[in-house]
Structure formats: structure tokens, C-alpha cells
Amino acid sequence: MTSRLRRAQTGEPTVAPPDGSVPYDEPLTPSALHRRLRTAHMGHRIYHYPEIGSTNDRAIELAAAGEPEGSIVIAERQTRGRGRRDRTWISADRLGLYLSMILRPGGEVSNAPLFTLLGSVATARALSSACGCVARIKWPNDVIVKGRKIAGILGEVRSSAPTLKELVLGIGINVNHEAADFPSELGDRATSVYLETGRRHDRCALLVEILERFERCYLAVLRNGPEELLSAWRQLSAIPPGTRVSLRVGDELIEGILIDIESDGALRLQVGVGSTRRVAFGEIEATRGPAEADHA
Ligand code: BTN
Image 1 (tube, rainbow, N blue to C red):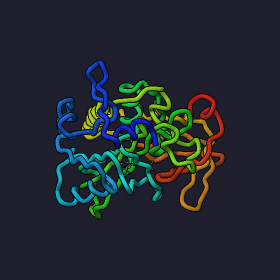
Image 2: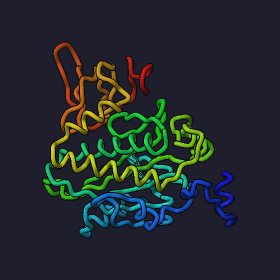
Image 3: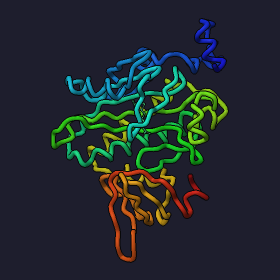
Image 4: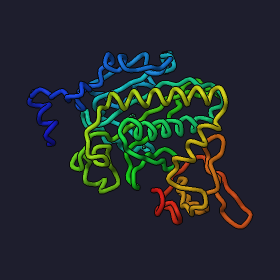
């Protein structure tokens, strides 16, 4: 058990930092968030839980019941936090950020992956500006530091409508985890803001930064289309064009050279002489080329 969890469980007071900021392991109360948040919609309605199964599951329920765009669900701890491909998202008490947003962007359902990219861009930029932690994005939704995962994004559409009537975007970030807070089976694949910077961070400040950045970029996409987002993504991508990648799509392993990202968030690969292939869903398993040396 880590020292701060021991302290929390024995009821010892948390000491306020001298600069007047919120102690890093304070709960993310809606009132503290509202005091700091400068957004037009995002985070105006907050559902906060000390413990929940999955914030995405709760947000999906709320969205189906008509909850407005911009409402968020946050939890101090998740007991069934989910990642892509039914993986578990380790969600230890008050160490990370576990957030789900309700979005109603309209447009075609096929554009849903764009908003997942937006989540990863907002998260990577907020990690840098709020915590001084320089992160990159590994397509489609991993936020990584030196090849280790620090955050993940899970976009889910549960409605059968042809338009993107409702979308839930879940963001999980490892903030104040020590190495011992991750299960051993993760090996050295996970990292946290604390492990990368050597400092504990105020989760409330990081959350505010994500919501503000997300809203700005979201409104720009809705007004002007995805170009600005795609160019931000290209700058943050851990895998530059020209890199040889192996992409897992279900049972298929696709080998190719990364050309670019397309306007709906799919990747374009060169898979043979004069032959390209578009991949909308999948997972990058390996890269060979400039990516590992320079970026990831
Ligand atoms: C991934 O990398 O596979 C995505 C991980 C997403 C985790 C977040 S934590 C908040 C939200 N609630 C969930 O159950 N999952 C997402």
C-alpha cells in the first residue's frame, strides 16, 4: 500500500501545498471544478462518483436518457474500468483521472473516430501544459511517453441512428501512480505523470485543462472541419510518415508504410508498389523506422 493511500485510509489529514493549490489526492468535487472551469458547455453538468463500475457505462445511460452535450461523469475509482478490445483499465482510488463526456456532434457516424483523436490531442496537450509531461499519440487512441502508455481514450456510440446523435468519450489518465500501483502483468508498458515528472499533480487542474482544450478544438471541428485537428494530430503522432508499421485488424496483420491520416481519422498505408490501403480500425503492433529512435 502506498503512503498516501495509507494516509487516506487512516484518516490523517492531507496537507495543503504552500502555493494554495488543491492537494493532489483531494477528491475531484464538482464545486472545485466549477470554480476553475472556463468553458461554454463542457463540464457544466458534472456527475461525480467516489466509486463506480465504469464512467463510460454511466455516461451511456445518461446520454440515452437525454442528458445534454457537455455533461461529464467523473469517478475517483472504477471497479470495471474498460479499455478498447474489452481490456481492463486499472482505476485505482484518486490516483488517476477517469472521465467520460457526452457529445452530440451530429454528422455521419463514420466520423466518430475523429472525436477519439480529438480526445487524444486534448489529453496530450493538457499533459504538457498542465504537468510539463511531453506525451505523444500512438494511433488510434494511446497517449504515450517514451513508448509507455500514460492515457487511453475510449469512444463509444451506442445509438443505431445514422447520424452521430450521441457519443460518449472516455478518457483515463495515469496521474499520480507509483510503479507499485500498476499490476505486475503490465510490466513496463504503463507509466504515469508522477513517474515521468517526479512530481505529484493536481488532478483538478489537469481535468480543467483537458476540458478547455477539448471544447476549443471540438468547436473548431464542428465549425471549420477537421483540418486543424489533423494537423495537431500529425505534430503529436509518435509515428511519423515513412515508418514501417504492423497493424492488427481482427485476425489480420497488415504490414505497410505509413503515408498519412485521412479526414475521418483512418490511416493510409502503402502496402505494395503503387498500392495503398486505408485502415479505419485496428491497433499498431510494431513499428520499424524513424519512429522508435526519434519519437516513441
Ligand atoms: C484504452 O486505452 O483502451 C482506452 C481506455 C479508456 C479508459 C477510460 S477511464 C474512463 C472511461 N471509463 C471507462 O470504463 N473507460 C474509460
